[in-house]
Length: 404
Length: 161
Image: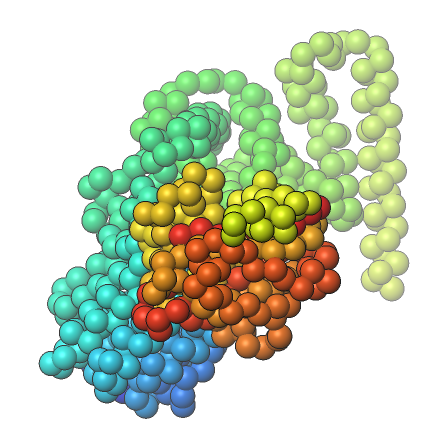
């Protein structure tokens, strides 16, 4: 968990137009930069990363060291290619930017992407390297792109001058099938100088390698057993909850089947997909349950469960198709969907529904602890009926008025 | 004789080693194998074979914070005759100095060490300038012979709290 301030020097010279790295050298470089920023901020949230260009209009700092990942990614977005890279000026400006970092306790590091030929002398580079070492700045060099004679030698000399205690590294990335980012992921830039790997690096490496040696959830159980355990437990709980939801959905689907709707097959699958359960479970549950009233209640319950609004809407469409053959069911659905809205239509519907004595009594019969033959319940029903009748009268009054 | 006069000067002064806040001690441009602890820490500094050596060039910048406010009276540097330090600048209460800003403000005191000093004679400082020292930066600018590496065997600070 090294606390570090990093300046990334990006090469945006004309040489970056070449396509020997897919899709282009510049794109590959951008991807690598994005990955590095993510890795650095993840390994320690107080780490800061800054970006600057070495070519283009000139050596320019785009973002001073910050821990805000959004800012960093945004500035990589509009970069233009052109000009020639100035390595020494770039490194010196990076060093200056690091000197003025806000948190002086951070270790200083510069990451240089050297893609174009280097026109400076080896001696000059060595001098720069020694200056960096004197000021305790580490340097990582990514040697890719152009490979003219002397470039590798110069960069190695620079590394030798800077390196103290193996904190500085150089990476040679030849052009080819492997993307620049993939090669770098397995390098000490990401793995933090051999500390044992951050979760980010492990996950990214897993994705790159096709998940061959991936840890579950991207967290090494050896590094952080409690976190791995917590993740596993919550995953299992979520699965169990979704299975329970799927069971209910499947039961509802069985009710719709009883209604004789042919489309229910597809609806069942869509509904179960919404609930996140497998189709096989739905097939098994379809043959259970015979009580139609129970089904209505189940649907109401399912609707009132915590579902995202999009799922809710899709369920509406599915349900409405199924309910075409069953008017009572349609009313019940409307009520449960429009719960909370104060449209007169719903009230009218409500009145009609309650007026349907048989429906109400059947509902009440299935409610535990309520006896429809109880006189108090009967009184209540009678009062509700009269209310609904008066509402109907009001609606009728309103309508002729509106017409006028 | 030299040691007697040394003890006379330091009569009321104590070695400030106990007041150094070791977590914040830093040294720029030190060589990895020959680090600051060889010159500062008890036991290591008595051993003349263990030195603090400079790395890329002959300059060294040592930063020593204290865990309380101290008054600095004198300091004592021991080193080999040729590669021992010559010009030493001391800055009190300046944090996070780098080689680029040592020339930005005047030092609290400048001492040019003679070969005598390197053998054991402490250098007395301008006491009035060091009354309220929370941290000390020692900038070793060059060495006796002008070689590329500066070697320091022992650094000791004397004063009162």
